[in-house]
Length: 464
Image (cartoon, rainbow, N blue to C red; front, side, top):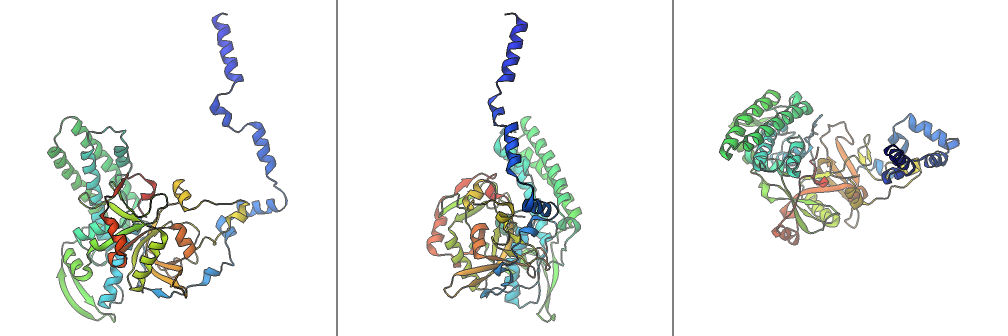
């Protein structure tokens, strides 16, 4: 057989015997079966026309849901003034400061009061920039394809976060009232500034790695990092304003009458008005994909380089609910996060798995449990809010819960969201509570050596 004949034979064999990967494609018979399986006439045609021209949730909405109009709560912590994070991912910061704000309002008998989220956000962004650059220095000997290095360059900075960020920032930089450093266009709309910062940090990260590859010593790299941070500081100051080092605050009572007026630093204001020992707060979580009653820590999941990684106790929902109820009964709000987009009626603010009947609309079932949704990336914590109320039945069991949100006073139920206990079980993930509400046996779990988890784990994306 000559060379030409052999080539013809090879081509013939390739055409007549499909590759294994190609055998899994949609062939003509399969396509015809799929077409025949859908009856596009009668009721299906009417339903198809309705879905094509309308929002799925409007058609799937359960208008007869009895939970929709139930706004009574047996136990709640009163809040004054709903905040609005606007087009930013700062829910974690609003939530943490709102927990502190409720304490200040109650103890000092104020009418309304808010901390400056912008002030804390400035230092959050500065600290995250330093965290990234120093992490690049620490990993300078690793290849660019290393999983940690790759993750760092993918996530140099962002406006999302979690409770340890609140702890580290306010403990180091203090707090100021909202009128001392008000919001700006870039704090309310963070995406453009974040993109600029991320671009600059990636460029700086590459420069540090190039210096290291050419033999630069750690001291030289740190000196260069400090020069880079000056540029970051300038970008932040131009966008967010200059953080005050001192300011004068006039305290007023509930009627608006001035009580006192004096000069503070952000840290002295924090110590006088908030005075919370942040080390007393414990993050607890419900993650059924991992063993309960174990302590976990997430590498690089912190806001400050010399701060604390995110560390939490993984508990059952029963344990978490008991802690939450004890805190609310003692008039203490809590940092709380969940998968807020699931089954949310945006008009009423109700979170209930019976809000929308997708199964009837599409003629199928959606049967995954919480563990399976986490494992398949179908669910995860996406938003932080302030847990402030619970409605208990005659046996002391929760029927529903309420959170103070940060999407403005007109969203949901007067700026709040209400969630049924059934929804709470399925889509609640994180809670931060004072140790005094946590049983001793659970506190003792903190003595364990934490199980370290990688920063790219899907359950530990920052809340927005």
